[in-house]
Every structure is written in structure tokens, then in C-alpha cells.
Amino acid sequence: MLKLAVLVSGGGTNLQAIIDAISAGTITNAVIDVVISNNAGAYALERAKNSGIEGLCISPKNYETREQFNDALTQTIVDRGIDLVVLAGYLVIIPPQLIAAYKNRIINIHPSLIPSFCGTGYYGLKVHEAALARGVKVTGATCHFVDEGTDTGPIILQKAVEILPDDTPKSLQQRVMEQAEWIIMPKAIDLIANGKVRVEDGVAKIIE
Image 1 (cartoon, rainbow, N blue to C red):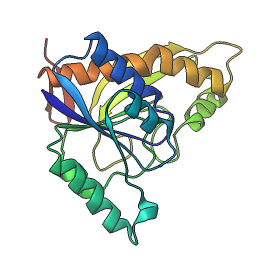
Image 2: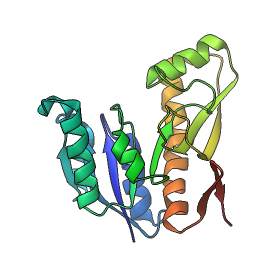
Image 3: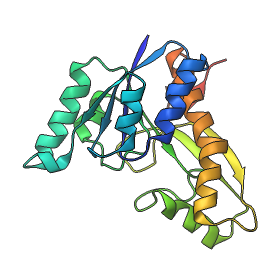
């Protein structure tokens, strides 16, 4: 049974998609051990509580230095015996020591088709604003492993979403979540939990 730590900063809609998928049996062989937020007021912590999952707030604001925060977050995850770290709208830079300890065991969801509209500065609505400003006709979401770069780790799954003529950043954000993010992140977790993802030469391969 794969033990998950889900890290989230805000409302936790992707967290809810994971909780629902585990309940429905579309994610098998996995359990959420803990939800961790850097924001004590995050609704994601309420979602965790409502589902009987332990929620923790570990915030950089509560530590004198960034190193102390990095150590605390990493130690919490390691001490709990977590198998997979899931970044579901987590807006804090992941500690380098955590990335080193969890190579190809941290996944993230990004609201574009990487390598488009990704990297430093591309998060939240900014991604969708950039897509609309560029006039692309198709966007989507990407679930990928996390490495030392920003949105540069091996890609696990992608799903395309059509951009409509009257889309606003907000409407596009909602549709990308509904039609892509909430689908591919649970699917990626299920694949990993059942040993169906392998990384070779920096490329993630799905084993049928």
C-alpha cells in the first residue's frame, strides 16, 4: 500500500479529486497518510479533516530560517515513511534535500502542456493568462515527476483541453481542472501505486 503525503497551499480541489478517486476505487493500492499545507487557513486542511485524514501546517513563517523549514518538512515526510509526495497546488519551493531523498517519488500537476507556459513565474491564473495572450487553441495539464528544476522533471501524463473563443483565464482554469487535472493526477497515482511507471534516461515510461 503506497503511503501518500499531499502538499497543498489553497482550496485543495486536486486533493479532493484524489480523495474521491481512492473512495471510488479508481486509485488502488494507495492511501493518503497526511495532508500538509504551508497555509493554516487553507481549505484543503478542512477537506482532509472531513475525510478523516490528518492535516498539518508546516509554514516557512514559523521558522527562523528557510533551512529550518526545509529540515522540518523533509523530516516530517521521512519520519512518516511516505512513499510518494504529491504536490497538489503547492506554492512553496521544495527543499533540495527532499528532492534528493525522494528522486522520482515526488509528483506535481501543472496546468499547461509542458513545455508550454511553464517554469519560473508560471503558476495559477498566470498560466492561463499567458495561454490566452499567446492565442493558442489547445492547452491542458501535465502530471510530472519533480526534479531540481521548475516543471522540468519526467512527464508521466498529459491531457489536452480545447480553448474556446469566449474563454477568460478563470473559465479556462476551471475547465482545465475539470477536464484534465482532476483526471490525470489520480490516474498517475494509480499507475505509480501499481508499479506501472518507470523512469529511464530521464523519461517516464508507462508499463502496460
